[in-house]
Length: 518
Image (cartoon, rainbow, N blue to C red; front, top):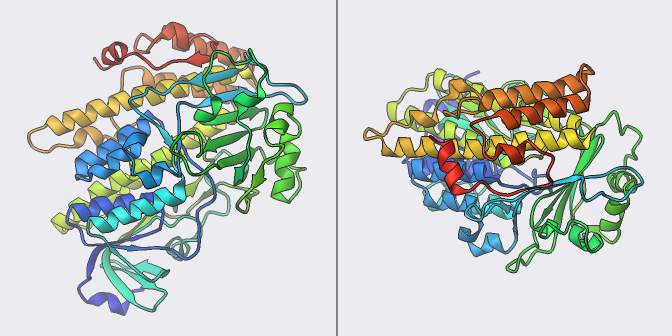
């Protein structure tokens, strides 16, 4: 139904709903490009106390946003040393993800682990999201976005305009509204709400909090164990076991930190762990108590914020777009915060949606097709992330299968980073401002040209893990198939290393990286 207040000329081109990183980044790039932007925060703290991680590919997406939309501050989100002191002091460094496999009742075996080293030039990090979110919102205001003092109450749209009602009763009019609120969004609720059952295959019970006094894992291992590695706590630590994982994101793992906390996220298969206590703290300790080294690591740890507990963590919105509105991540869907996908996916959608909105404002053309295209990309990214998570859960059945699977994830991240950089440089060098090399959305989840064979390697590997899930292939057979693919890939960096069950992987040398881009 048409809102009578929407007949007057809107004061804003785009209203952005949300108080998270994605909302702030979108508002910042739009405002920098001359779009009249209103940013409205939702009521309450809708952000789960879960830390996140970045990887080199994430950094390249941030660099793309910074270069294409002329917001240089965004590039710092991909390089920890370049961040403002207010973020460095509360966030952690990430010198590489590590994966430690655990068996019930036994000490962790040093050979049953994989550790990736992030190249120093990328300086990945662990964002303390409450502060990172606030910084992104401040950045939007600096670049010209209007920030509503009053919180969001309701929002809607019709064929011609959108509107936002704030808690102080004011009605703001805009030509378009973007929903980045997350769970509980009034705009999603107005347009069908969440699906009764999420359109995602992965299912999990997720418990998350921030803790003090978590013992660094390197302090637990006797001398000689894991001697080849640097401190585990200076990277993202992932404890794996059959049916789930515990992820540790440290914020106090460097000299500048003033924030001695660790974000702890437990994800388990709800069917395999259906007998856990309803109380989240009791449930967490019931799980870690099965594994001696985990019990020791958390023996003196205490939660400093209330637990987030969702028996069914996954959710999807029934609709993600319509006339004059778009629901982007995290309103569109929610899945496990694992494998560094959440921040990365949000930044990818900010890039695609910002380009569509800027064109619509400048051309005065609000036709649906550009936004349908972005919605398809968002769905593809969600589907691919979901498939990775399903494969990760299945791979946790067997340490060798996990070792093979996570190498495929590493290859994808590394080559996607290099390929996106090449596409960005090609777009920047184009004399006519042609950004089509970074808008190949018809290619699906990897929306730019990539080395021949990479998509096929990922697909074959995920198919092999799916076969294990279906019972048509053993974990050992799937691992053998994946390792053979890694050894035979002429386009891959260091195939002899990737194709073996070695516990540590170092960054690919620059000479090798340049070869991969030819």
